[in-house]
Length: 191
Image (cartoon, rainbow, N blue to C red; front, side, top):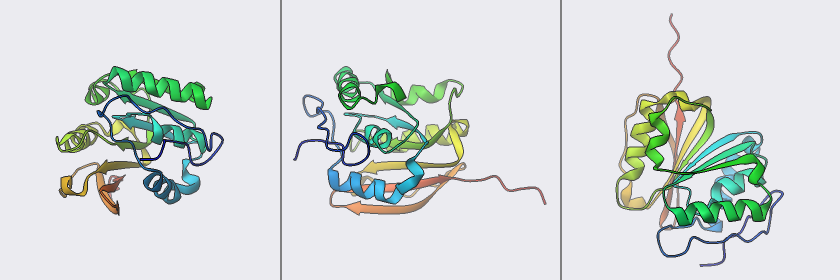
């Protein structure tokens, strides 16, 4: 695998440190470029929650492209140290918050911020993406009205869902990576 790097924005070309060991599965440049081509100018001034953040590559790419804020969450101490290093190296630390905690604990407290994008890329084959979506669905106050949830999984992990507060609207497959896009459902207005 080629070295991790920022592919667009103010930190373009900056190499990122990888998390030691095999506890994370970094996003490839191809998938990251495709994702940010889909999001395009909507990234500017947005807020992100990067769950199971790993190296922080997705949130850092968002910051480099003009996102206003990213909260990175990972339970792994090595991942948290890597994210902090990568943020300092890219000079983007001032627009970020890095928390070492279980990703699900985020939703067990009252929302202190709303997010336009929640990126979910958990360890594979453990059903954690499904549990993350269950938690998000049960706590919609973390979502901005026009928010998206983006899940990065192996295509073999995918199962259709039926949720109350968001709905799937797109999928994109890139080899062994599947991006699944969900958007917040607006409540029906009284007639």
